Image (spheres, rainbow, N blue to C red):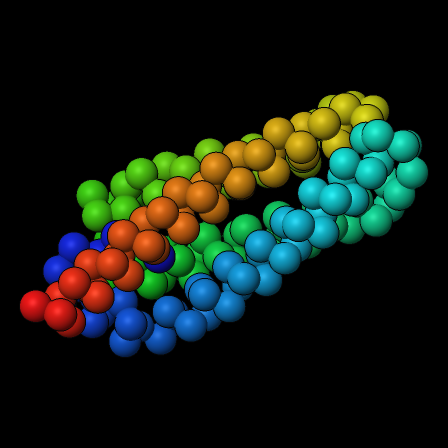
Length: 153
């Protein structure tokens, strides 16, 4: 979710019907990332397991779209803006970069790149997801600490 600046926004965020959906998809996406990254690394280093790596890539891309769309709906509930609102601007930019790099998979596949090259592209895409995930965690921790501080005050 990201940093929510005031009590009203925090309440809206928790009350949104999309909150739990986004959180569940995000957790599943993290697990798909771990499995997929492992399978892609395995293929790149050994040349084995292309089919499994490909299925994991498709799964990760589908989950990325799912979390992006539901996240946009959540943002609409919280800040009345679907994407790139000032409250979540940098989080959305990180997500946009990650989703673009993941979807480059389809471009290089269509262009006839080798299996090795395709999976190297996916390694780069997975790194962009990792940066976006770390940003998401940092913003989530900030939001949690703010809520905790407000409860004490």
